[in-house]
Each structure stands twice: as structure tokens, then as C-alpha cells.
Amino acid sequence: MTAKWVGKRMAMGIVVLLIVSFLSFFIMQAAPGDPAAAFYGGNAQTLTTAEKERITHAFALDQPVAYRYVAWLRETVKGNFGTSYKEGRPVSTILMERLPNTLLLFCATMFFIIAGSIWLGTVAGMKEGSIWDRGLSIFSIATSSIPAFWLGILFIYFFSVSVGILPSSGSSDVSGHGGLLDTIRHLIMPASVLILTHVGIYARFLQEGIKKENRQYYVKVARANGVKEAIIRKGIMRNAAIPYLNYIAITIPSFFGGSIIVESLFGWSGLGQLTVKAVVTKDFPLLMGSVMITGVIVVISLFILDLIMYAMDPKLRKGGVR
Image 1 (cartoon, rainbow, N blue to C red):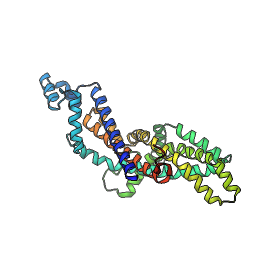
Image 2: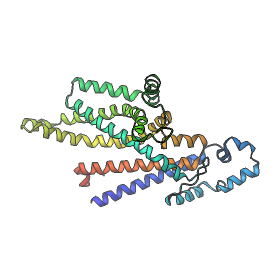
Image 3: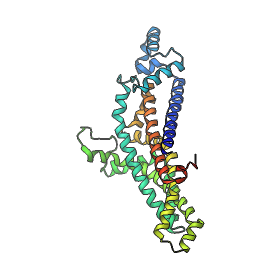
Image 4: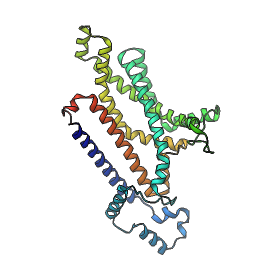
């Protein structure tokens, strides 16, 4: 049963990636703009009609879109994302240079968001009607309403301009010899912006789930029969964790959307900043590569969360929930 369930989840992930690649490719191909202009940038106006036709033929842009998609997919499966229009280097090489920074930002941010939201949500949920309960409600609304770019600008003004204790942009020292501590100093502000704009709403979701479980009849019966509070809390947390994990899974794609803004604002050299650069320069191979790598990260993250929920929820193991 477990192997069958894992196989289905993996198949679903592959289907999702195929759909993402199909939609992304066709939307990008439908975007306005001359491929020659995208390739040559400001020098495009000097090209003759014959040179533009040569470029179009060289990149198979005179072929039907469906043919180009199948050819692109065939090469992508082999690990070949093509060559960047602007940099003239393999897209896979460029992506591997940026991927570690994105994974560092994502993993560090999600760790503190999950840890902080579990602590805040548990404390507030178990003390319904207390100052913790009302305070978290206000905090979650306030932090989730703040635009990430505006909060980032405030951080830069205070910590970089006014106080001068943190670097305003980049992911490492310009010399490249800053080491781990230097990377952490560059990571603090972009990670803090993402944490503050997400931890409140995550905690609020868990808080409401705990409050709902705490009102259930089985909890009242357990307390009336003298069951230890620690055991009751464990049962409440276990039942409230399933929808909480589902919520995390739902919001991971939007989390990457927000990280694109943060990476661009702080000059964090990750996939988000690379995606914005590819859009501006109309570097379609690089843009497709960025979208697909981001999609793979999202699918793997959702698969890990599915495994955790499968281990925690007996209904999934019994096949009761599809």
C-alpha cells in the first residue's frame, strides 16, 4: 500500500511538471517581441532582414510551437536546458550557480517560519481568550498585510543606511572570501522579511485548528476521565497538524512568488532574481529553466509534506482519503 501511494504521488508530481512546462512554454512563445531583439538587445536595430531570418532559423523559431515544445522537452529530459541568449552559456550551468542560494534562503526561512508558527500557534490555541490568543490574531493580520517590498525597504533604510550593521544587497562579500558568517549577514534581512510576512498567518492557521480540536467532545471526555494533560495536548496537536501541513503545502508556490520580489530587492543571487532578469531581457531558455527548476523544488517539497502527512494520518494509510 505504501509503495503504491508513493508511486501515485510521484506520478502526480511528474504530471504537474509537464503541465507547468507546457503552459509556461506556450505563454512565453505567445509573448510579444522580436527574438532577434531579445538575442542582440540594443544592437538589434542594426540587423538586416536576412540576419534576423538567419537567427530565427538557427533557433528553430520558424517551426510550429508544438514542434519546438517537443524538441525542448526531449532535450530537457536529458538535462539540457539550452543556451542563454544573453550570456551565451549553458542554462544548466547558470542555474546550478544560483540554485544553492535559493535553497539556502528557502530552507532557512521555512525552518524559522514553521518553528515560530508552531510555538505561537500552540501557545495561543491552548489559551483561548487570553492575551496570547487575541495578540496573535492582531499580529497575523498586521504582518500578512504588510507588502514584502515595503518592509524590505524599511529594513534596508534602518539596518544598512541608518545603523550600518548589515549589507543592503548581495549574497556574499564582493571579494568572495567572506565565508559562512558573511553569507549569514547577507541572509538575515531577506530571510527576516519572508519570515515576518508569513509566520503570523501560519501560526494563526494552527491556532484556529488547535482551538477547534480543543472544543471537541473527545477532549472533554478525556479531561473528565482524568487523562493527563500532556497526553491530551499530544492528541490535539496531532489532529491539528494535518490541516496545518496541508496549508503549508498550498502556500509553498506563493511563497516562491514572494521570494522573487525579496531576492530582487536585496540583490540575493538566487533563482528569483535570475527569473526577473530573464523576463526583462526576454531570455526564454533561461526563463524556462528557472521556471522548471522552481517547479521541481515545489514538487519535491510537496512530496515531502505528503510523506509526513501519510505517516501521521491513519486515514491515508488505510486508503480512506484519496
